[in-house]
Length: 327
Length: 156
Image 1: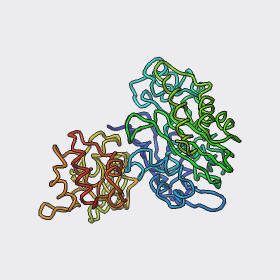
Image 2: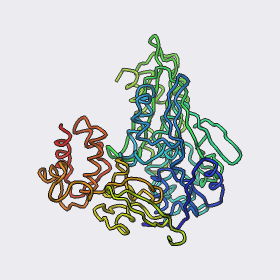
Image 3: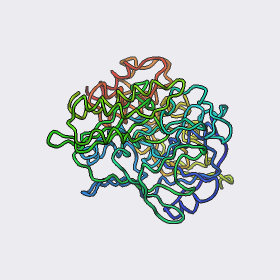
Image 4: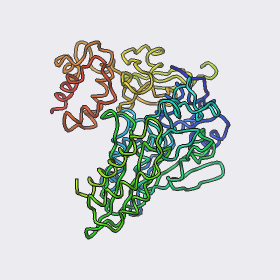
C-alpha cells in the first residue's frame, strides 16, 4: 500500500517545527503510528511531513503539583514510569489496554491524543465520508454503524475518537499546552476535541501549524480508579465502549467522582450528571446503579449501535463497583 | 549525491553501519527488504496489525511498516538476520524449533524479535506472554507453541 508522495524535513527545534508546520499541506510526524497507515489508505494526504520526533519534549515528571508529560513521551515509557504507576495508575492502565507492544513503543502521547477521530468509512477511500472528503456524505449514518457514537454525533458524522489514554486523562482533568506561530496557550483536554457539527473534517480546536507540547495532570487525591475497556477481542482492538472511573472516598462517603466514557463519542465523554449524583453518597451498588442510569441519559442510538447504551450503563456500574470495593 | 527529493540516512543494521538514500515516504520495511535486501522481515498487512514486520530499533520492538525510514536516521536496527546463525541458533530460535512454534514460517521472524524484546521488557506468566505478543498474529495457529517456546526461554 502506498499513498501519494510527500516531501520531508526534520525539525531541529520547536521554532523550526512551527515554521515548517505553518505551510499549507504540512503535517507533523511523531511516532507515525496514526499518520503512516492513514497515509497509506489515502485518508491522510500531506504534501510535506515535518518530523518532530527528535524534539526534547519527552519528559515524564511527577511533582507535588502534578504530573507533566511531554507530548513526545512514548506510550510505553509513560505506562512503565514508576511515578505514573504509583500515583496515576489510571493513566498506565489505560495505556496498557491500548494498541500492541510494538505500537506503544512507537506512539507518542501527543499523537495518541491527536489521532484521527474515525470509523471504517473514513479509512476506506472508496466509501462516502464527510470527514475525509467534505460533502461526500456519511456512509455510516445509514450503513454499518455498530461502532458509531451515541453522544455528540451529527447528521454529518457519527465517528468516535479511539484513544484510551485520552479518556483517562480527561477523567483526571488534564490540561494541554499548545505551541503555535502566535505563541503558547493552554486549554483543558476536554476542549481539545470537537463535536463534528457540520464541519466533521475538523477533529480538534488546534489551528493549522499548532503542536501539542505537553500534557499536565493535576496532583491527584488518593483516587481509587480503574479503566474498563470492553471490546470484541481481548487485545489490540479499539474499545466498543470504555469507562475511566475514579472515586475519592473518605469516612465512608464519596468525596468526588470522575467518570469518562470512550468509544461513545467524537471525544472523551465526561459523565457529569453521574459524577454529581455520586458525590456525598456512600459507595453502594444502589448508588452506583443510579449513577449508571444517569450516565446514559441523552444517548442517541443509530440502527446498529443501540446496544452500546445498556452496555455503557452496565460498564459504569461495573467500574464503580470495582473501585468502590463492592465488586 | 542522492537523487533530488531523497533523504540520506545512516542506520546501523545488525551491527553494520549503512548509508542509504530513501524516498521521504519509504517505510523502514520497504527499505530493509527492497533496498538493503534483508528479506527476513515480512510484509503481512502493511498497516500495523499483524506484526510480521516487527524489528528492533535501538533494542525496542517496532513495526517497520509504520516506520518512515527517514525518521529512523541514526538508529540501530536489528532484524532476524542479526539473531543467531544457522550454525548457532539463538536460544529462542532453538526453543521455537523444539516446540514446533511455526508452520509456514511467515510470522516467525517477527514473532522471535517481538518475543526477544518482550522478554527484556519482563513477563510474569503465560497470560502476560499472550498479551505481550498480541501484536503478532499467526494465521497458521501456532500461538500455543509460540507461548511455550517463549515461556521456556523466559524461565516460566
